[in-house]
Amino acid sequence: VTRIFRPEAEQVAAELIVGSGNGLFSVVRETGFTCETCATPIPTGRGLRWCVPCLDHIRSGLPLADRVGSLIYALEDDSQVYKIVRNYKAEAYRETDLPRLMTAMLALGMREHWQCAMKLAPAASHGWAVVPSTRGRTKLRELVLEIGAPPLQEVALRYTGAVGGGRALHPENWALEQGVVIPEHVVVVDDSWVTGSNAQGVASMLKQSGALRVSSLAVARVMRPGFGANPEFIRSRLAGSTFDGHRCPWTGGECPD
Ligand SMILES: [Zn+2]
Ligand SMILES: [Zn+2]
Image (tube, rainbow, N blue to C red; front, side, top):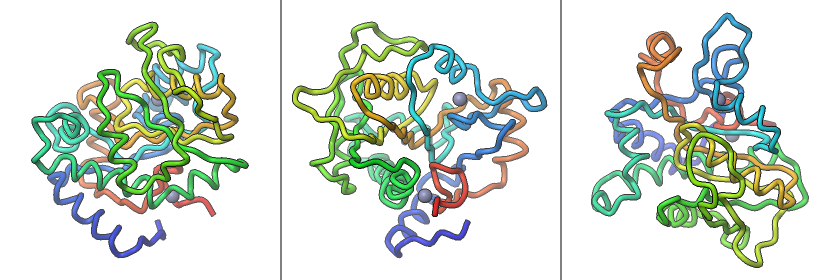
């Protein structure tokens, strides 16, 4: 990957590798090897293109995000990266490194690759939203604003909880705040992606409300090390690899021209 960052971003990337206990792995995008939507490992040699949850989303017939970007894998439950994405919002971790490391990851994904999302989804108007916390926490939105997302482009959302949790897609669990005008393209930011039901539910709602394009950025793709194709993937692809912050979260490789 040939992309070069501004010096301060290079420093952020280097700091992140140390702060995450060297357990930071860039997302791998490879057809037939990882899910075309969420980049989770899938069983190889069977002509599969998606993981089971993403296939369920597609089969629902609801409109989905046009593109899902991710920066890193977070291995459950004891990796430092997983601890960061899981706990950075919690009051008990406020004085630790976790919020700062989460900010660094968001900054790499959003600041350095913001234009990439715009290039991949040409539109007359762009905006951003965060997936609202189902527990009313506002930390992610604060961090996104802190790293410089333009406040006037925010598409403010709330969690209605109309249908509740679970793996299925429920656009009605999410709503626009009153008076919000939807731009043609919305980048939806979340800290982590487990089944993707929340992020895709938000994408569905936005499209049903008039957005033409939705790009979904999940900082971390959460992965259970012992599940399905994961152990082999970790052994053959992640072990010994190093995080490369220049790798585009949207393409898994070079940034778009
Ligand atoms: Zn998937
Ligand atoms: Zn990029």
